[in-house]
Image (cartoon, rainbow, N blue to C red; front, side):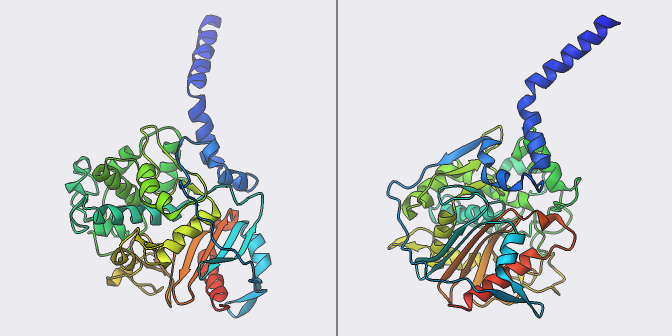
Length: 397
C-alpha cells in the first residue's frame, strides 16, 4: 500500500511538474482581475503569456507637445457634479492623454505606468483588427465583405460561422450564441479565458460555437467574431497579425514603441483583445482615424473604410437604449462604437475602461487606460460615465 501511495504521489508530482507553466497561466487567468493584482497584471501581460513583438517604427515620429490644457474639475452626471480627479482615482486610471489639432495638450500617468510602458488593450484591439481587414480588402487580398467568411476559411464550415457574411462579423451581428459576462465564472468568455490559459487553441474554440440567431439582424457582442476576423486576415495575407500590423500601420505611422500581441500555443494572436501598447501609440492610432486614414500624405487606411467603420448602417446597429434589436445602448460600426447621441464622435472600448475616443468636430483624440476593478460590480455604469466625461472634455475645446 505504501508503494502504491508513493507511486501515486510521484505520478502526481510529475503531472504537476510537466504542466507547471499551464497551471501558472491558469492561476493568472483566474486572478487577473483581483483588486490587489489588477494594475500590475495590466501593465505586465507579456510576462505571463507568450507573445509576438511588433517592433517600433524604423523612423519613430515624435508628436508635438504643448501641455496647455488644465483638466476640468467636474462633469455633469445625471444632474450632479462629479469630481474628475476623484473619478480618475476611482476607476484606477493608469494613463490619460489628449491630442488637439495634432498636438499633445495633456498627458498624465498614474499607478506605475510610464510613457514607454505597454498596457493591455482588451477590446480596443478589435478596432485594430478591423483596420487590418480594411487594409487587406484595399490590397485586393479578398473580394468583398459581402462574401461569407467560409469562402476564405473553409475550416469554419459546419460551425456557427458557416455562411456568415464578413460584414455581419465586423458589425457584431453574426448570430453566434455567446455570453460575454465577465461577472459570471461560467460564462463563455470566462470559460474561453481558462481554456486559453491552459494552452487550448483559439481556432478550436471558435469551431465549437453554435448559432442562435439569423446573421445580420441583431447586434450581440461576441469577442470570437473578432477572432474570426483575425483568422481571415492571416489567411488572405499569409502573415501573422503582428507582422501585417507592423508592416501596414506600425512602421508607416511612425509608432514610437514596441508593442506585444499575446498568442496561443499555435502562434495565433488573441485578436479579440491581446494587444499591449503604450499610451502615445494608442493615441497615434486614434489620430490615424481622425485624419481619415491619411498619414503625412500616405493613405494608410482608405477613407471609405474609415467612414464605414464609424457609421451604423442598419436599424440593429443604431444607438439608443430603446433599440429592440441590440444588446447595447451604443451604436456599432466595424468594431468601433458610437455614443447614444453622436455628434462627430466615436470610440474604441475595452473592458475595465480602456478607450480611444475621437471627436471629429473638435479635432480631438482622448486615450485612457485603466485597471478599474469596480467594472465587475453589479450595475456598473463606467462605460457610459467615461463617454460622458470625454464629451464634457471635448466641449472645452
